Image (cartoon, rainbow, N blue to C red; front, side):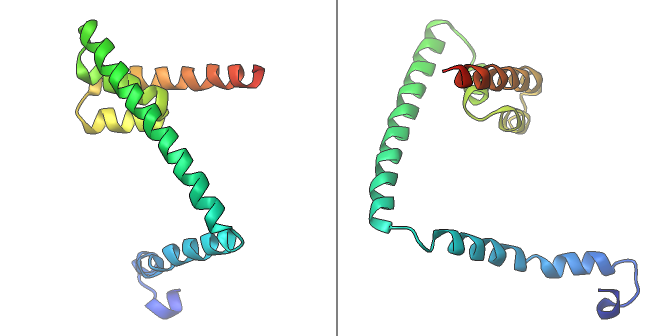
Amino acid sequence: VSLLLGSTKLAPVRAAKSMQPVAPWCLFMFLATVTVGANLSNLTEFSLRVAMFVSVVYAVHVVLLLSIGWLLRYPLDTLVVGSLAGIGGPSTTAAIAASQGWKRLVLPGSMCATFGLSIGTYIGLAV
């Protein structure tokens, strides 16, 4: 790399920037290799069923979340972070709470998600 770009201190930075367009193509090649033997008719039929199931689950989740939260007079930010802790995990919960400016909910949301994942893993194994 230093022979191509010169022996400056910026040579690694220039090399990293020049390699960025290669990364998506490597990902596309990997995905094409993995999916080359897929039966598309079975895949589309199964994926439509999964998409319908997931949309019903999320719709019921939002309706219950908002209605119970309204009855108990919880603030919307607390409901959103609590929902994210159950669905998204600790990193997603912390990122969205911090990006929305809810600094007071970053740590409780992350802890709730972490405890939920650890307890849920053992319950899932037991089942």
